Image 1 (cartoon, rainbow, N blue to C red):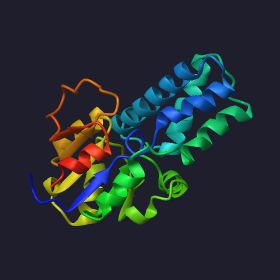
Image 2: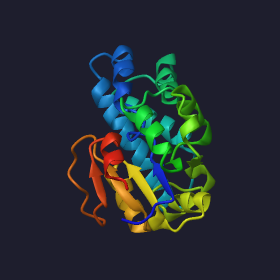
Image 3: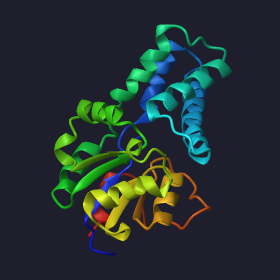
Length: 222
């Protein structure tokens, strides 16, 4: 593999554990938490893709709220009480996966690191700060700066500009197969952090590396 100038991470599902939302959702909506969280996440992502295809943009906090509204209405749950806001605010304090902090510490001693996410700057600053990850990151890059969402090349290009690199000199790490497909098509070197044991995507070139977690990534990077 090439000599790399940086390692860039997706945020949600890669560093930060979205499954943790299920516990709060179960407290707020007993018996409906799994259906709620799965539909919420699906709509959140669908809306980013639809907006991008329509040439429109609403920031990720708004999209996250709209996805939650859709999920609640579909399941016959009220939107006009304090519970949805508690779920939304939990995005600012999501925990990391267990190995993330120590892996970022060790990787930051070998490479400059960054986060590249659909999340707004405020969302990313909140969750990164809540987990005390700031010392390990050279850049926190938001799709807001591009006015479009991944997998648009304009979003991935933010990392190229941040590190004055060509795409192949950057390792992009994501747990989302569609994101890895977009990043590989853009030209990044890619590492799919396949935390869920998902089947590989078939719409794009395969990733350069496949690992179960960030410790696996540490072992494979030169």
